[in-house]
Amino acid sequence: MTIIKSIIKTYLKIFFLSLSFILIIDFIFGKKILNIINPNITQYYDHKIYHHDLKKNINIENEWEPGKKYNTCTDSNGFRISCNSKELNNKNFDIAFIGDSFTEGVGIEYEKTFVGLISKNKSNLKIANLGVTSYSPSIYLVKIQELLKNNYKFKRLIIYIDISDIYDEGKKYRIHNDRIYTMKNIYLENFQSFISKSFPLTSTAVKNLKNNLTSPFETKVKVMKWNDCTYLEKCYERANWTYNDNKFEKFAINKSLATVEKIYQLAKENNIKISIGIYPWPGMLLYDSENSKQVKIWKEFCNNRCEFFFNNFPEFYDYSKKHSPKETIQKFYMQGDVHFNTDGHAIIANNFIKIFKN
Image (cartoon, rainbow, N blue to C red; front, side, top):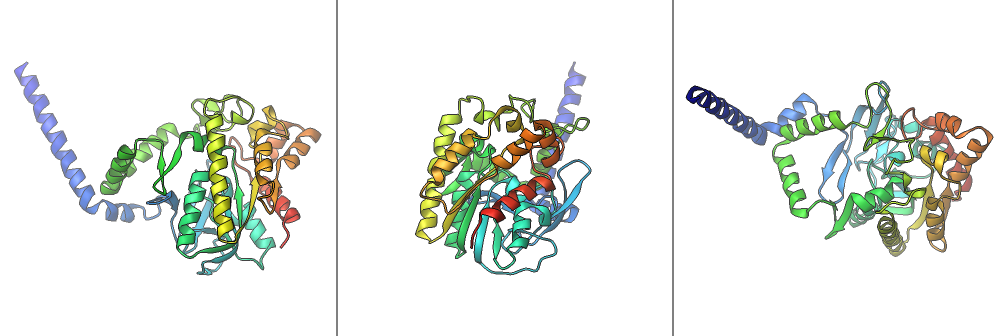
């Protein structure tokens, strides 16, 4: 028994000495090592004010759908652009689009995203894409505030409000002292941020391990999931608030409306015209209606506030009536995913081009 205890103590000493050595190396050289190993490990970074953003001046090959690669390029502002476009290097724009992963255009080459298609059609206008994956109204507000403080100017602001924005407002993000925090305890979040910045190698390894274990894509079936519920099931909580009653729904809707109202007032103070765009997720075509809660909420909000209201529900539901929800989902959305494919992005772009007037 004494020998076993001695062996255990020896192994524990070796383990903690090795761990201490790794953490010391990580603390001193972690960032440099990470840049050498993979300078473009991700296109995102932690932003000290509005949680996260796209890195500036990048050209990174990504894989959103398994086996399908695409490139993400940004300008010196950190706004996504076509990888073939020239850097404009300015802070004055005619139109700024903001939204989440749909507006960023994940999984699709920029030229085929709806913002890219609109930019091509409106080539006489300077257009900025402020959209980034996992954004929601709280981040829209704080990011726009920060950009305006830094002398960015926009004549028009188009907010494409995603279905998942309500979920994120209810369960994920909050504003404290003009900064974005998650719903975690602020001291815990600051501590986690300190650990992440102090030990980048270890933090990256832990994040990659977690992502591999909880990835929304199952290797065999390649279907997006959330809490063991697939994106086409009625229980898919990030989207089902429009046709199911959820505990967070009322709070999240009121919070979202109050936050977008603040964006409207901010825009008004800066002579920026505001518009809102909406679109359905695939599961909504199965369980919801064309006159969804999402449509009612934002149509009513837009009364006497918005320059334009870009409602994309009719196009998708019209197609669904002529064919079927299943065929509509197959035609306009990525396989096993809630996001639009190139045909879906074209619907959003054409709706904008038809309604928008200079």
